Length: 126
Length: 126
DNA sequence: CAGCATCCAAATGGATACTG
DNA sequence: CAGTATCCATTTGGATGCTG
Image 1 (cartoon, rainbow over the protein chains, first blue to last red):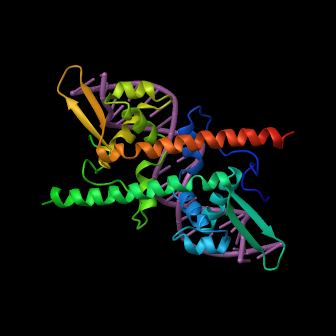
Image 2 (cartoon, chains in turn orange, red, green, brown):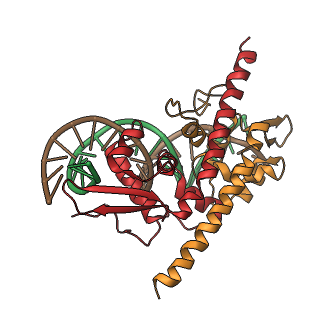
Image 3 (spheres, rainbow over the protein chains, first blue to last red):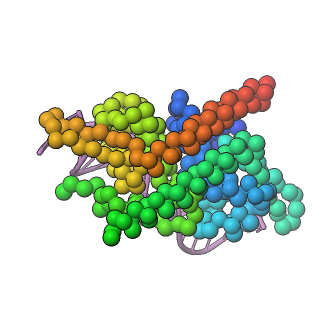
């Protein structure tokens, strides 16, 4: 038992091989939760429980899964402290931190798109 | 029959409602194929068959599905010509085009990450 | 040419309960 | 506190064949 998958620390969890580095990047940061986790960690090192509280609607299962993948892909680092009760901290790595500006840009684009759509709607559904 | 879903042109295919514009953006451009399609169309207007040839490994089903979603979300425009044989052309919209630089940045990051990982590997597995 | 229909496998995401 | 384990629903992706 134990172990979610057989890719602990030095293998990437790629679903398929690809030459395209855009496809490759999408595999690393894609999905509903990963960028959200990255953005939280950009504010500073955080514990598991803090992330759980900050990221609305995420379940423990999904948080754990996504954290494990991000760690395996080298975007975040996991630090366990031998204490009781246990303390585990997550931190952005350098390569993970380099995704932050892209994240911001995407956030800006989403905001723009949303206003664009609702702006259109008001003229469309006159 | 006809119609893949009940969201033709003016409704967004969001899987869930969200306040977060980053989450919102991820819903619009996420998945394996959408950014690839966008990048192809950035080179210029293209026909269905051309896209099919350019995007390696995509099936007709997935290409159609993703094109429909991109259209419904206003990132691309679909132009049908009443000819025989039929001709259908896809073009980036303005809002779709604004995603291109982000795409490029992501591509650059993917390339960086990849070299970073393979670079590490050579020192890791000494 | 540009697709749609059907069937199916795998991945993703979630609810709930339990543990070192 | 920081997860696991189990079970289940939904989504994504794919193979193949057919059509206006």
